[in-house]
Image (cartoon, rainbow, N blue to C red; front, side):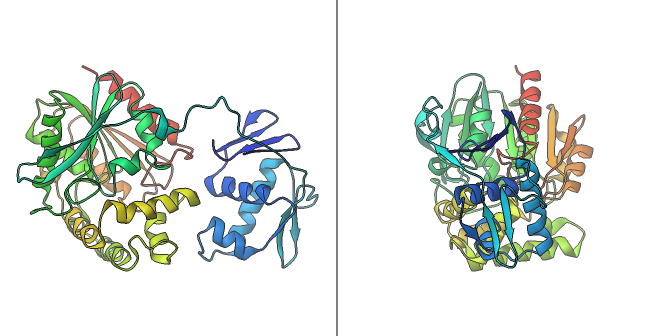
Length: 397
């Protein structure tokens, strides 16, 4: 549904806000708040409703609420004095009072992503016999996306979080991706979760997909896996794009804070894995993507149990925190681009510096933002993907 009021147009499905026909960029929470107010035009929304819908039930300060309301007013051309479109009802809440016209979304939009392209899922065996699910989609030169925590080949394909990224990566390439061991459609048990075993999984997928020399896109925990593979097979990797990654897992870092953070994440998983609506589930998802919409947060909660059991998730996190590829960085010979957001709460930006200092001739780009998982509504979304695509095109073979 598209909402029109005064000189504004709001399209929630496309995450688009126009004023006088020009697109206006809004922070994710401001956009969600505007949608909530406009879609409930004429109704009084109290602060409890705002807390539930916009902040997932978390308690935030009055100053935070006021700041977001002021941002909405500024975006639509209203102000706190006139309140001609958005009224504040003292000690009660807020009411959107401008006349709103709703229209169905235009029919000439592209088909929904889950209907646009089909994928075929196949199985291969890793070196120790563990079953690994993989798929290749798109056309063009190859790109391998390294496996990482919390994926599911089928759910990723219809995900409001992952599908936009897959579409951008696959716009001019054939993208091979897989569910790492004990997650998604791969085997739910494995004899080992050590780094070498996860490198074996990437190796098995590359062989099964017929990839001979190819670039790798890796993020988060997939970064040390990609680095270890490139060290093992320097002749096979043409270049790498590494996003939000690390060289040393939390247990190898020097500060007590990092070790405490590792234990906190494990506690969250044990207490709230896959339990929709709980504070633990919300805390886990918002740690990885603080600016996510409610739809994206709900999807990631659904993804949790679909991707891994709570026990497997704990075991994976414990293994991931023990990875250390700092000794392999000097062996990397392929062109490498390192991307990281400044305020990443999952993998600190300092680890991007460790990677860049250790990998010969690596390029480093630090972007503004706080989402460990890149989101299509991020202000730096286009910059992130443009950087990656330009680098991959530059080093195409």
